[in-house]
Image (cartoon, rainbow, N blue to C red; front, side, top):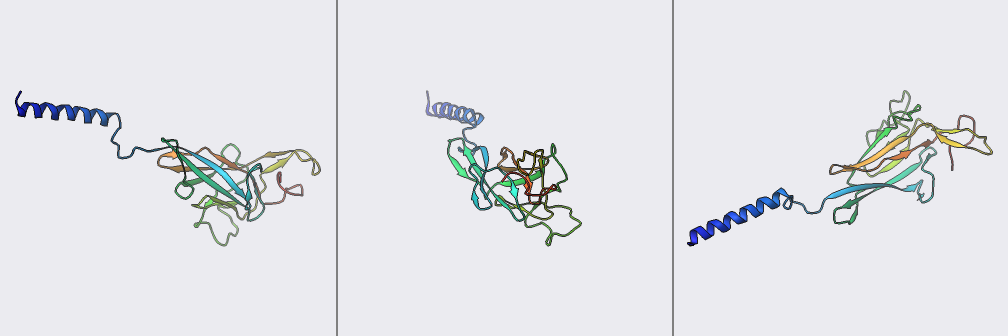
Length: 186
């Protein structure tokens, strides 16, 4: 076999190999890709959220979210400041909540008539209770022996590179309970 034919046969075999690998996704420009995002509540009003009921409790209350990405190499990375946060009123428990607003586009000062509010979310995952205050908890017990249930809440998710986290449900207790006393479990 002559050199020209040998070279042509090797080039053809190489081309078949490369095209076969491309079809399998071997050369997509990235070999490490995001598989999932876990959205966690890390702080509530500046305190560790471990073991606490998620509740936006009190005027100006805060909840800090953390987005952890898991990649196909099983390594995790903090994506808190890279993801896009989306907050909506829970369509299954809308109550009387207004649409949330995203900082820095929230109306300042927040004055009636309100078109958004109660929950403000930032690009860094900080959730803040803003005006108008609300209580989205119902007490079917007494003030002395409350039995709390949620009547309305917000849903927050985080997205990055086409992947969306599981939802985090955030009830609000920034106003006093209509029957008197605090709003929701503390």
